[in-house]
Image 1 (tube, rainbow, N blue to C red):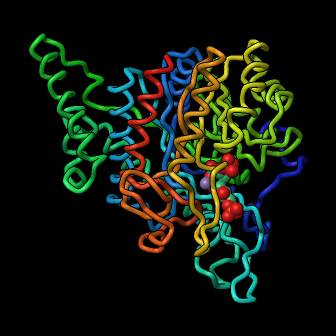
Image 2: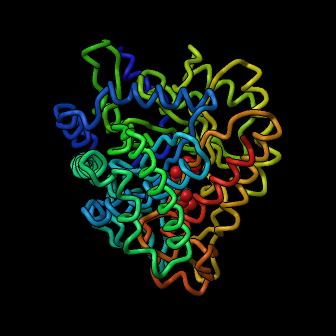
Length: 443
Ligand SMILES: O=C[C@H](O)[C@H](O)COP(=O)(O)O
Ligand SMILES: C=C(OP(=O)(O)O)C(=O)O
Ligand SMILES: [Mn+2]
């Protein structure tokens, strides 16, 4: 059997109950004919940059929506998210003096694992929303029915989003001389915006100095931003896996970086089996129950050559557990000689339901988990390699706390997420300043 299909005989968690498997087959055949969204050479470049992270020389900023939506694939939405990512990245690069590898949870993050497969409202039970790639968000039987045609729509929405990202980041918008422009609509009404504006002023002076001294590096005019999503729906990921004409090796060309979620990382499961065979840089989310033995077994399965940059562990323990549960993992993995990149997802271990019923997260818990992650690496002399966040470019009210204090009673004002609560732009920028400070005092 083709190695790319061995996953089919393993149990695959969190797959939709498609009404008609023949239709999934037909859609997969159509997807398999469509052009790649990313190129193998780009995935290799990212693998090289993640190798620098694993060596302790760079820092990952990975983030975006919990669940992208088809209706969110607009110029405004994508630009706002990118702007936030660029601002955070500038803060980290400048304030922490570290090269930042920028990875969007964008252009493909359309499928969600769920803790319950059904949702009940007022006695009515319907399938849970599993992302726009599977079913609709609206609470009606029609919307919630899984529809394989959505796999194709996801491909096209990813293509549109990626095209915008490429245009914004290569076409002048991401030029470092635009540091003020990214902040224009934000500065007056926000403390984070004002703090950013001061930093942008310093960058301006540094750029003017470099210019006067005769340096105007090409790298300052554009940035590389990579795409990523959870590789959840294996029919989709398999259909978008192609053999690289240069090397003869398989790459999943739906995104540069793919990760295995906390709910699908079973060693003998279909997700690990599929991901073993693609050559992209990949990640695995590790939650609070992960043992060092689990982590070592995942390395054996997914990175048998111990190739720096191939494997990233995304730690999401929760603020209360990270200081106790992470050290044995880092110690044993480091002792094994594997060079993984360690990055911190301070979102998924800190979700709770507010009294009003909204799913939310406390900004302070998010900060505390990142601080715990840094504490562990500082104590062990290992490298805190990055953060993985859920944020948006808009002023939503989904997470509580932060500089512009949002309280639980405010959540209803602008609660727009299709799945998990995201940091808004001010909270994301505040966090970037705090992470930069933690990095400076750790290294
Ligand atoms: O984004 C992550 C998961 O899909 C999400 O946290 C699960 O949320 P649920 O517990 O509402 O299903
Ligand atoms: C589902 C997610 O996370 P986890 O697998 O860590 O729960 C996510 O990143 O949205
Ligand atoms: Mn999420």
